[in-house]
Image 1 (spheres, rainbow, N blue to C red):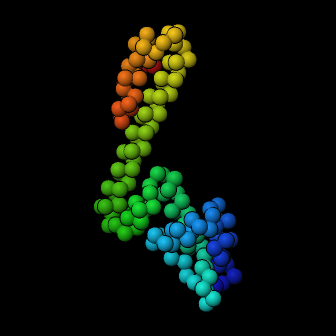
Image 2: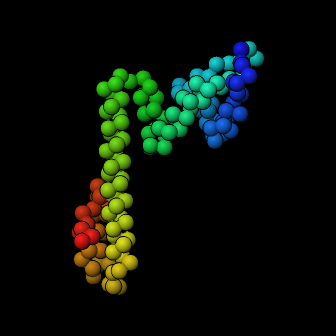
Image 3: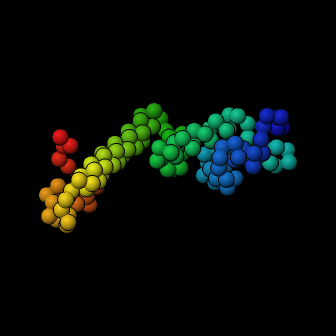
Length: 140
């Protein structure tokens, strides 16, 4: 039985800022299990909405739905491993973005017409295809 505070899927989706198909998909992959009303409608209470907000937050960290599902099914040690792996990826991305920002800052001041004429530009470009952040001279 739904209470006055329970919402149907359209209202829940609007409250979360997602489309209804997103909530249906999360249900189909086992992330959400909203109860059904006697007439078969999904009923979203505050607990289900909080869980959906957690899914959204975890997605913003870059975790896939599969990883989020695994977090919910895992023991503490396994959850820590998933989270530590994602944190390492985030730190790697931050390092790459910082190196890229430094390169762009250098490009603003670089007077060479061709990148290959500049040792700093050449060093960055040579390493840019490497997965990890390129080594770039200190900003000084």
